[in-house]
Image (cartoon, rainbow, N blue to C red):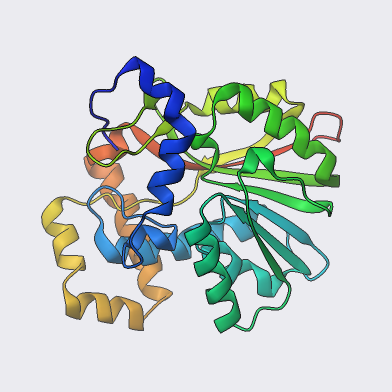
Amino acid sequence: MTPNATKPNERANFYETALHYWTTQPSENPELLGVPAVGGGGPIEVLYRQYEELRHFRRIVPIDKSKLLLELGCGNGRWAIALAPLLNYYEGVDFSAQMIAIARSRAEKHGLKNVGFFEAAAQAYGPVHSFDVIYLSGVTQFIEDGELITLVSELRRYLKPGGVIVERSTVKINGREEVLARTSDQYTSIYRTAQELSSLFYTAGFHKSYQRESYAYFNFPPKVNAFFNRRKIVKMIRGTAPLSFIILRLLALMSRKTLGPLGEMRDYAHVFMRFRRSSDTYV
């Protein structure tokens, strides 16, 4: 996540650069899971994060067969595969045609009939339904402040009474950071603080009713990460899930408590935030 030097005029291409980056991800790249390994955690951290974030999401968002959910920034269908079987209807939107094509293919392989996928920028999408849950899945860090306020304000029209917006984002712990057309891989992002995000949503007419790190991230030194990613260990962890993931969570928490945050997690955090309309009763 550490950015390289950028030029001031690269801001004009912020959206185009983000679109190009996500459209040109190779199909074998783990980021296509929508769960990139962070902090040197490797493939096993990807599987662990998938399990942990889904567990957390289901705890903070009551979903059942009566609910309709819209995901903006659906990527290749990571959340669609996990959530659609629990819902009445799931709708996924992404600005990358490649991601949408993969999501549709995966949904078809899983036999999911209650899903719809649409290629569009989050800022330009106009749903035809109202939803109980609108999920901003790691998409807001690719949207400028003014556009984000406009988007969230517009989403009020598509949220059912008592519905919630869930924001999953990477936040900067010690002050905002903007990555503009990074020279190494042409990646762009706005890493806001959690308070900045809350303020932007407040301006758009929402109040925050929940915030917590989305999962207990891997917090191990490189040699420990390498051990967990040995082929035999990966096979064992996958074969004994979810118990193995629970053990990994406890180890990660113990490591963080004894060693403090390691690597990029000293500066960044992955969080879930839940928002309700300011006019709704606070819950």
